[in-house]
Length: 273
Ligand SMILES: [Zn+2]
Image 1 (tube, protein in one colour):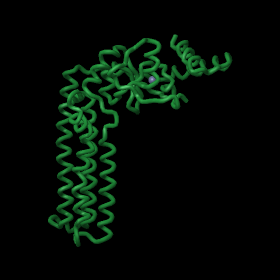
Image 2 (cartoon, rainbow, N blue to C red):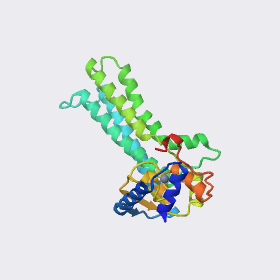
Image 3 (tube, rainbow, N blue to C red):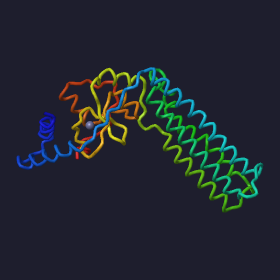
Image 4 (cartoon, rainbow, N blue to C red):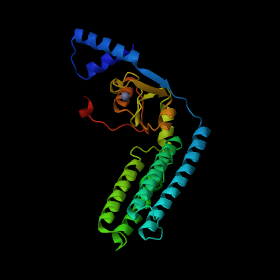
């Protein structure tokens, strides 16, 4: 039955497929489908989501505090307030920057995870929503920029070569932390609620990416060996915040689904292979 639907899509795309070729494609797709593994993901209750999110946020805060601690240690090494006889100053600072980075990145990833489990409200609070969803970027700035500024401004604290090395390492760390900390697909409490209200059936997602699919036979899923499926709540909890562009179009056409208020992946005709 699902394969018949797929044929309909092809006709709409205006693609003429000869009968024999079509048959071959169908057989191939059927074979692919057999090897495709679908893993069921359980849905958390609202209370479970909230408590998990709270725990993650507390751990994030602690890790960010540690990150700032390592930054301060790095600054103390810079000003020679701290000194280890067996560890050159440059290496002591690099170790501090790396530990700072590790804490900062883990904190941001947990923070983003919490923002999907228990999203922030957006209505009447656009700035607050932006700050809270992009806290990973803000914290990355706090965890590295003061150190970078002090290293650049310092005179005679580091030799020329060490100064360059430490500055470059710290800037790279800042960029990594900023990129991994940014939430490129934030979801609000309102958007999650709208998705849960409209999309009552199962959805599908892959091991990577930030979108979920409404149809198991979506053409953009054909190369994925493993699929995850569950409620839209489970998809969003697992970091998939928006509906696939193709599935959204199909649902609007085939099922007359109104996707107002739901995050839909941005797409264009150019993406249609
Ligand atoms: Zn799709």
